[in-house]
Length: 169
Image 1 (cartoon, helix red, strand yellow):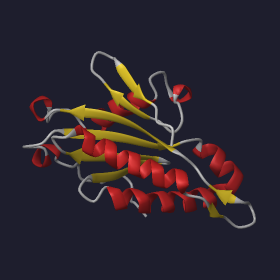
Image 2 (tube, rainbow, N blue to C red; image 1 turned 30 degrees about the vertical axis):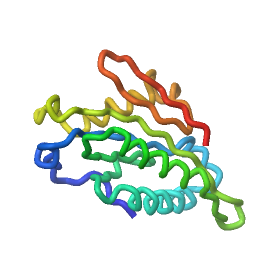
Image 3 (cartoon, helix red, strand yellow; image 1 turned 90 degrees about the horizontal axis):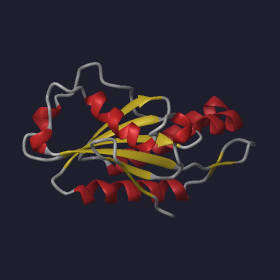
């Protein structure tokens, strides 16, 4: 299962010399409720299943376990639709996921994503990876944790203009 943030900073500029970049903030919806119902070991079991799905779809990306139920995907491409297709595929697979856990019932959950697209010409090597990821998180949670909608993909736009894309799967 995925390790936490790397201790050595990732040199995004090295990867990003010729391509645009998408920083994606991933968050399991209502993870606290899942942990409360299925215990922490049930939450860990769900995280292992999610890790397998994320790794399957992000082989050409950088995948970082940020903390708890939060992940960051850094994807390099000049085509924004590529990362959207990846995220839709991840969501479809997660939404279809349901597995028994001990005598407590079936675990199922949804996941939400915030995206911060950075054009290669606007990439600033002085900005930390986590700052770009934080803008992706702001897209998903514009007014803090309690403002997050569930099972959603949100795109961060400059000037605090946030465009929401809701998809019914």
